[in-house]
Image (cartoon, rainbow, N blue to C red; front, top):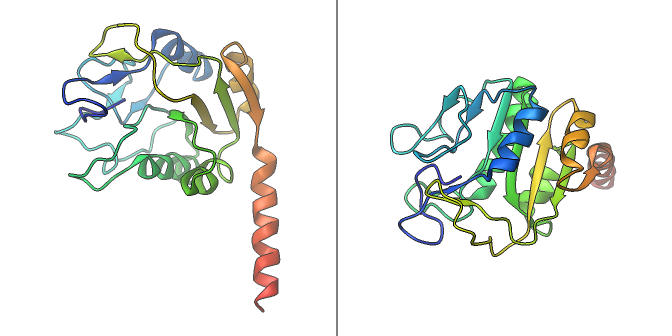
Length: 194
């Protein structure tokens, strides 16, 4: 998740738990083409992995069919990025390359970045049942839970497969209808100003 960046401490890389890596692989028919937020402890084992400092996942190509993103949850002051930057790239990869993208992120439904890149661009969300998701710390399951609730977001054209796999892990909600509602709302707004 941290792509070598620190989140809460200076000494830890936070990784995706085994059960979610397995589920992501199931959605993607057994393989993950790109992990743009990898680190030396990652168990994702994507075909292509971007790790800081050699490769900044926000600056490299995302032209891959199956992308899994577990982004840094904090602010990267050195690079001037936040989780908003990662969600924007997720939505863009789906729109530009028709990639399937899964992202494990904190639930922040009241934020601008969720409204702009999740609710109006993604197809489905799984609100995970884990009340305190246990990330791997430096590659090990140390039993500490995250201080926030998390969700798996899906951008892609196979939301039924996402539902089939992730219903075991949480409440899966189809949000594809929000895309059309947003377009309609945008048109009404334009009509008001013309």
